[in-house]
Image 1 (spheres, one colour):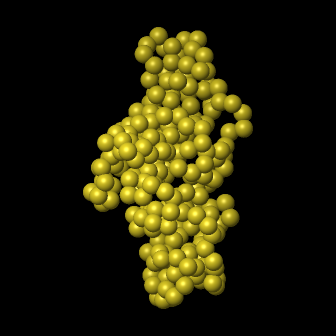
Image 2: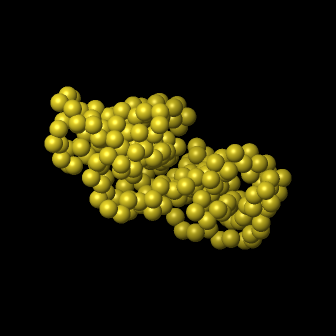
Image 3: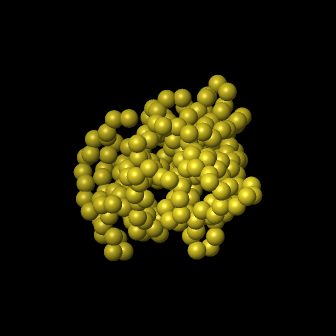
Amino acid sequence: MGKRKVFSQHLLHISGLEVMVLRKNVKNLNLRVYPSKKEVKVSVPKRAPKALVLKFIESKLPWIRKHLNRTPAKKSISKLKYSTGETHFVWGEPYTINVIEKRQAPKVLLNSDKKLILQVRPDSESPKREQILNEWYRNQLKGAIPQLIAKWEPEMGVSVKEFGVKRMKTRWGTCNIRDRRIWLNLELAKKRPELLEYVVVHEMVHLLERLHSKRFYAFMSQYLPDWNSLKDELNGGSSISDC
């Protein structure tokens, strides 16, 4: 979708925060937070009353502060070896992996001091360890996705017949409209739960509107008013494109 014309812009100072207000040819108020730049921007309809804009921003202050203080996960430069001491992410939180070799069935556990326990058989190689951890990630997603679908189906008035989880190089999710089937990227288990919800909602909206049209983004703003910020966070520093 092309960029909207900006009619005016000005800074608002609210509760110690600077918020850039952009008046555009849009129907809804959209909030974006850029943690790396410590910037907050709000796109609002050209003639939206100032009181409405202030009320909207004030209602989002806890969310804004939470995301401004979030440190984006740095992408690992070297190839992961799945060995003790490495950092791996689970639902957006960093965990230090601790590999334990036992002649027992492999398993993955999280403990209270941010340790990810990867139990493997002796002499297991990195590819096998990766496979074990990825299967655990898959199960985490398969436990979370049905709840999100059940939450949004009555809200949207659509029905998802089937979902799946797989590794995808370029997309966070896809939707087969004819079969009412959605696919989610395995990597989403490493992201915050809110980002998984954003992708689920995005794919379910395709059941209402096939194309990334104005109508599609109007639905996104209706269901997730802060979807733009979630999109920016998800795509930031990633080789994976949008949904």
